[in-house]
Every structure is written in structure tokens, then in C-alpha cells.
Length: 285
Image (tube, rainbow, N blue to C red):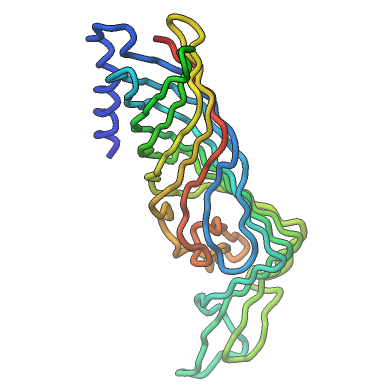
């Protein structure tokens, strides 16, 4: 995929070398901001969209006075947050040493349990975005200013996806079906106050429907200024895996837990990129 993206960009930018009309080509810088989030559904709790934005370098090829093709490179930041009063985790783990020793053939299933109080997880994603959009401009009177509309696709390549988790209390314990007892102290079990951890996670590329509307202002013979609103909606599921536990027990070192984002767990379903807001673009001809 990256190979084809680079070919597209190389073709678009190299076209400027053969320019016969300086009005045919535009090179621009842009800045945008607004709601910019990872949108996902989750079993229990509340997922909230965050604010973000981006900066970019663009290239526009004007086929006619009204029609253009727009591409370039953008860096965008996405933020989201998940909160819940209580988050419980349970799964089976290898059976530790149990006293008394169970007889042969007895049910020795042993379960790891964890409970987070006032759980909060913040996610952030830095993504390299490549737009491929068709743009139409309609002149306003004789001023040279134009209304414009752009429609197309954007390909988003995740660069850095991070999370930070906090909880007032984290309690862990084991449960033995053989003894019918909870184990709260041995084997790494216990209680942690003011729990905090952070880490990284992986996502698939995002393929987005992209729309932009606004005004193009002629600021000089060789420059233009664009002001508009944009809407980017991810069409595919970016979740790379959902088979991890939020907290993982390590039988070989019970005191050393490992942690994962909820976006890697089965309580989260279908992650999509979503952003809309205002965009400013300054172009040179």
C-alpha cells in the first residue's frame, strides 16, 4: 500500500516540472482544527470524542478554470476518552499451588479477577493523511473570489497510537473452583491505590470519505487563501486485534502485570476515524 501511495504523490508533484501555465499549479500549506477522534462502540461505560487538528502541505492541479484535483500530505491528531465507574475483568489462568493439594481429576480451574474503580483511559493517535480529492470552484460575481467544494478520499496511516489509564483503586484476586475460595494476598494479588499506566497500541490504516466546503479568496496575482469547513469519516474498521485482556497476569512473575488499551480488548468494537472542523489554506501559484 505504501508503495502505491508514494507513486501517486510522486506523479502529482512531478507534474509541476512540466508546467506550461503558472496558473495550473498551486502549492499550499494548511492548518485545521475541530472535533478529531477515534470513534468506537464499547460495552458499558462512556466513550467521548476529543478535539484535535492538523497541518499539511498540498498540491492542486487546475484542469480548467473551475475543476481541480487536490492531493498532498497532512499530519493529523486524534483524541478520545473512555470512562466508567467500575470495570471488571475475569479470565482463566494456570492454576497456582493450592493447599490442600487437590485429588487427581478434581476441577482445579483457577480464575484471575480484577476490578478498576473510576477507570479512565485517554487515547491519542498521530496519523499521516494523504488526500485525493476533486475540487470545483464557482466564481462570485466579478471579484475573482470563488465558492469551492471538494469531494474525495483520504488514506490515513497511523504513526503513533498511545493510551494512558488511571483508576482510583485496582483490586486483583484469584478464585479457585476447587476450594470455592478467593485468594487476595498471595500469587501477586492485592490492591493498588491511585493506579496509573500508559503504553502504545497498533491500528490499521484508515480509508476516509472526505468533504470540504468554503471560500477561495484571491489575495494577489500569485497567491490565494482558502477558508472552509471539512468532514472526514472513516469507512473501515481500524481495530487490529481485540483478543487482549486489559490487565494480564504473568504466572512466572505474578507481581509483574502487563496492561493493554481497551481498544485492543473485546469490550471495544469497530474503531473509525472521525473529524470535522475549520480549515485554512494558503496557496502560491
